[in-house]
Length: 467
Image 1: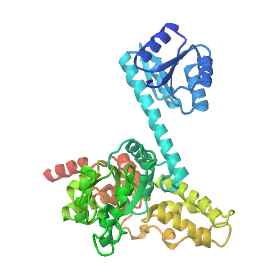
Image 2: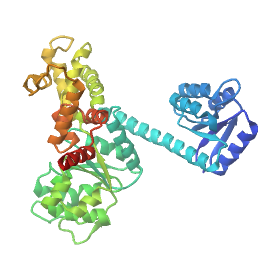
Image 3: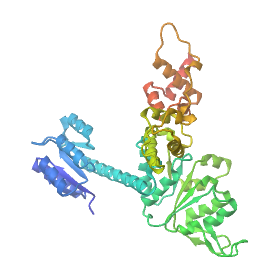
Image 4: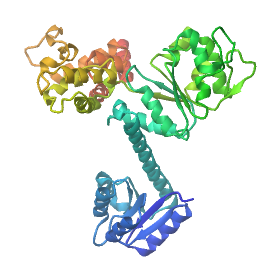
């Protein structure tokens, strides 16, 4: 089976043939082209996943070919070949969109590693694209849409998890879209044609949850007039999503552990053990490690469930996505409520950006829907915004800062404020960022700017104490 299709472009026929043989020996399907025009014609006839091209060629240069491929075939990854003394040109090519480069003479080991990494990148991008497409098509992609680094990292991990049967533990605050992520993992897995069953461990009354999960036999208890399948049995060969797993009673955690370890369930009142084949995805907003310390959650179950832990970032840590989400909800909800002419001025977006959104995306959607329904004109006004968005940031009048006659450095004040906030919260970046009304990403950027690191600060403090 082919490892992938590669197009080799080089005007040197002997080098072209050497590269072709090397790649074929590594298991790749290889096409060749002698110049840029020949390469574009080849791509038009038959798609390749990767193009390996020389930079110096008569007629169309490798850089020009790279630009054409980027415009006409953006899904194809390009690796360039350059002479050892022309690394600057390779760097220029990477700025233009090349994935990587190899130098002449091309060593088989370097070629194998670079091509394998490039094709792995192609497939990862395709997996993430498929995941996004599925979310958009079936499950309302709005809950995890965006381009922030935190979100892309999460989708990368989720797409990898989807290819396995490993148990997944999703942690995130209320309203961040944990169930949507679980559904996306299921529909991108080998179990996608089988059931996806959701069980909210916190919503089912304690006296009913065992029967809901594991089922019962006729006569097992008062009111059990017939055999009943539990949801775990209904989901056989599919995926079970255990939402709010932290609410599951301790006595049922033992039975769930048996399912995870051995694929076995015991119905209430049954004398025989039943077997089921399910993939488990659990989610919680609670700190399970703290619950383990308190004795309210089993440590062995925690480690069985968290083979692949996924952390859904809160909206306040996705500052780059807030504007996009706001406008998305506005477009969708004004159609829903029959107000297609309603607009949100750009000047009001900062009010959305600086709010902390404790209810996350669910709260943002509710706020936008309220505005769509209640706005008095076709342009949302400042007076329409809820009070929590309009609330002013803390006034600087109350900060104990004395301005010296000789002048002052704003950067020095900023550095000192950040240092004091970090010290106040024992260098916990999340708490310090919230205190300073910054995103964590912005705080980290400013810490790097001012070279603020805990180890350096502690060392300076020790030197001061010695002196």
